[in-house]
Amino acid sequence: MANKVNSIDPLRESELNAALELMHFAYRSFTAGPDRILEGRGLQRVHHRILYFVGRHPGISVNGLLAILAVSKQALNAPLRQLQEMRLVDSRSAAGDRRVRELRLTHEGAQLEASLSGLQRREMDKVFHDAGEPAEHLWRDVMARIAGDVPGLGNLE
Amino acid sequence: MANKVNSIDPLRESELNAALELMHFAYRSFTAGPDRILEGRGLQRVHHRILYFVGRHPGISVNGLLAILAVSKQALNAPLRQLQEMRLVDSRSAAGDRRVRELRLTHEGAQLEASLSGLQRREMDKVFHDAGEPAEHLWRDVMARIAGDVPGLGNLE
DNA sequence: CTGTAAAAGTCAAGTGTGTTGACCTATAAT
DNA sequence: ATTATAGGTCAACACACTTGACTTTTACAG
Image 1 (cartoon, chains in turn cyan, brown, green, blue):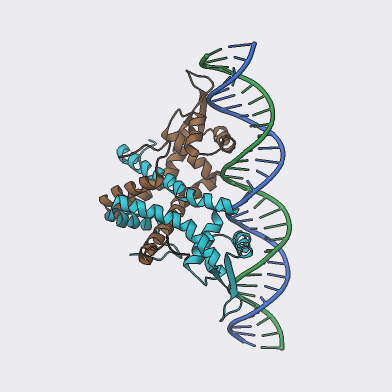
Image 2: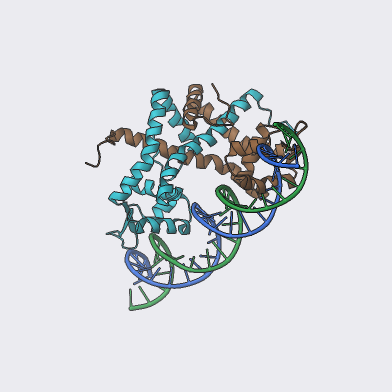
């Protein structure tokens, strides 16, 4: 009487389990490259996330960044300050409202960001090239469905 | 003279950036469900990973689990002990070599594992159903290429 | 002008998840 | 008997987070 609702085809379950594992291992492999570069600079994963989103949204406010990253203000504070001290991120008051800081990558920050995300872009480019154009398109579709509605993610297609 | 090697088509770069973000947000959304269930039991992400891999590989040794999870023995120790104390994981000496422990889920452990991974399987099942059969197949292909060679991942197709 | 609210920054304490190093027991293999 | 392997545990530490409390600066509405 235990299994009544969960009567899923065991073959289908194996296929879905493979999908769960792919999610886990692909993500792990995906972040391994940048992590090695960051380590050499004494930086961590947070710093890459900050650099990436500031790079993609120049002039973003601290609150805007907070919303995308979905972390607390205090969690962002220390690493963001560190990036500013290292002259990788620039912060200045907005013209219209001087309470909000507009965040931008410095030239050096943009270079580091390019080397971090560049690794990932080249890897994805190679994978998509090897897998073929339909694979790229459908992969994106599936991933967008998994991600669901995310604030800060440009709702593609 | 700075940009010489990295002369990538900016349009292509945007597409690849979208892929990087999808990786980030899809993974986040993917783990959010189980995390809520775990929280109710006072457990965390590690515990799900352990339950999952022990469930998929009944009788696995501690070293085998260590290799799949790619963490230190000490990092595994505490949460694994906790799962044993909660009677979710069973550990007994192997017949052939009494040094190695064979890990298995208890009935209750299997139930919890099913509720955690079941959430993810149902989500993936729905996404694949909505995206279509070719999407599922090609998604798997792309993810396997990203993951690369992983010890413990059944080299599918 | 004044009170309230919003944006940002900071300190403190606590938690979870990982690391290395050191050390122990039990068992197996030579 | 010695050495290697599988496992378990303690201590110290690092990092990424959390919540709570508080401050400063600026904007805005009465």
